[in-house]
Image 1: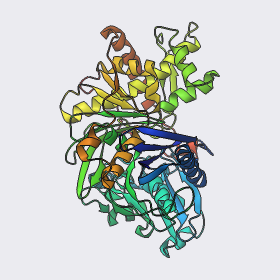
Image 2: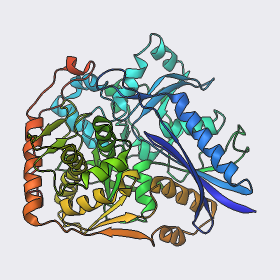
Image 3: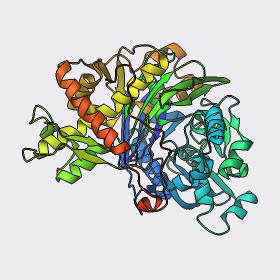
Image 4: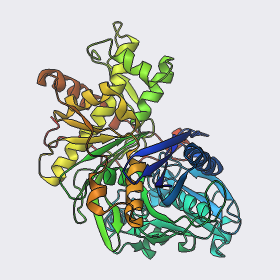
Length: 517
């Protein structure tokens, strides 16, 4: 009989399930697409029930593919910052899952933009004041229907990120818990004490009674309750946010390396060893905690990354993202066309929730292929901005970028990334590295692998992309990008423009940090 670890990665556009055997081989995998809804401009939400159903269906398909396998442990990775409410007794969701991209809570942050309060929030959480993070979303949900706050006061409701929703359901509604890495993304956790903070919960108007218990990432999060498709008693031994799990999957355990996960958005992350404040628009976060030992990281969050390709594919009437890449490859350059994909505002290093997207440089000679290529360049240029901010914060040159995620399968995108960074890009052979990372941590906890053995798994096969663009061509593209970014940042939208949002602070400016000429 084969023993394997079940790894579940619940993402924004897909839910994936993998079985990893003791040899470190993905023996079967399954996925289900996720629908994303935009009920108003700037609002992004998903069905909580659909999220749970996608997990059940993908796990069921995995188990059916290898019925002889016994599941030794479960690991869960999840889209971060997305939050929902549910009834503690019945397990039924109350309202939608408000996703990380959603801007509906922006207006709630206005009262917190007093400089002293902002400094307090950032000092305790490591995060800038932005609607990306969960706290204001939870407050919005509690005020979305009459009586919810009273129910929360009576202890009838749970609020949590998607990982805690999955743990609650998998354990038969017995456990309401999250890991410290996901908790650090809510803006309610003091990252030094690694506890929910009373001052923060008061500032954001979130009652502590609804929040999950915060545990180390490699804790025993409970055991399955016996509902189909999993048998009763399978231990859940690891929980991590998807970006954190991808970092672990890359085998990165100490400072000095940077990874980028190319999903709907992109997260660049590097370990720092200790909490390190950013001076260049990045966040301080907890990547994971193993036992009592937290691993701190610097991170740059890009709101719209791989989603740019999906958006542009639909806009151009193409069949899929492969067709977009094929179209982009028919021209040698974007001929001055530049796309700033601020479709949900701009994240790091600018943090402007109020701005919107822009395409510049169009002429009568512009063809769809130029626009397609500009869309791919936009992904790489956003990453270039964050990569440069990371180098400036660290005070050191970073030699290469490690890449993973669905969009990293695009060879043209990876080549453009190497060209824009003027650094090699090292792409892992496994696209589902978030699932792999949390699966490895769960397997270590179960004794499936030793620490060193797990760290070496999935590290042998990589594709290297080396810069080959001339400095002159790169500088021209970057100059066009910085001009377009400057133009976007010069605009301001009122709260009514996106019905529930509000302009962010006006402190953002175009980066002129080392390496970002």
